[in-house]
Amino acid sequence: MATLDHWLSAYAESHQHPTNKKLHNYCVPAIFFVLVALLWKISPLLFFVCAAAATWFYYRLSPQIGVAGAAAILACALLQAALNFGFVTLCVVFIAAWVGQFYGHKVEGKKPSFFDDLKFLLIGPLWVAEPWLRKRGLMGG
Image (cartoon, rainbow, N blue to C red; front, side, top):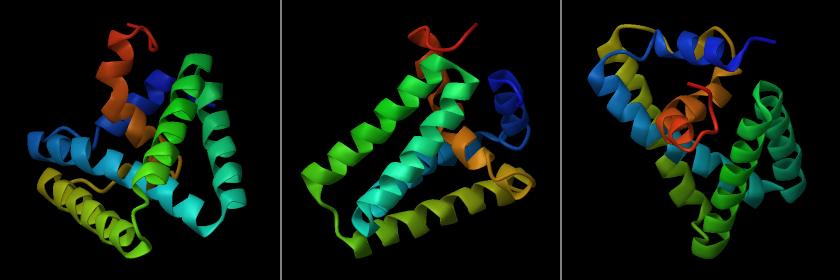
C-alpha cells in the first residue's frame, strides 16, 4: 500500500490551480458530510460497513489518521442526527458540490484523481484537512 505522503502528492498533482483548490476546500467536506448522512439515512448497517472500511483504510495509512478519520465520520453522523437534513436537501448539496469539483478540474485542465484510482475519493478529505492535521501533530512534517 502506498504511503500517506505518496497519496497526498499524487492527489496534489491535479489540484494546483487556486480556484480548483478553493472549490475543493468547500466541496470535499460537503461531499464527505453528505455521503455520511446519506449512508445513515439509507441503511445504518451500510453506514457502519462503509465507515469501518474507510476507517481501516485511514488506519493503514497511519493510526492517527485512522482515529481522525473515524472522528470526522462520527462528527458528520452526529451533525446529521442533530440537523436531520432531508434526502432531497442532501442530494442537492451532493450534486452542487460535485458540479463545483468538476468545474474546478475544468479550470485546472486535469481530470479528477479518482478517475485513476477510486481510493482518491478517501484521499480528498485528507488533502483538504492536511494543514489542520499537521498543525495538531497528526501527520508528519
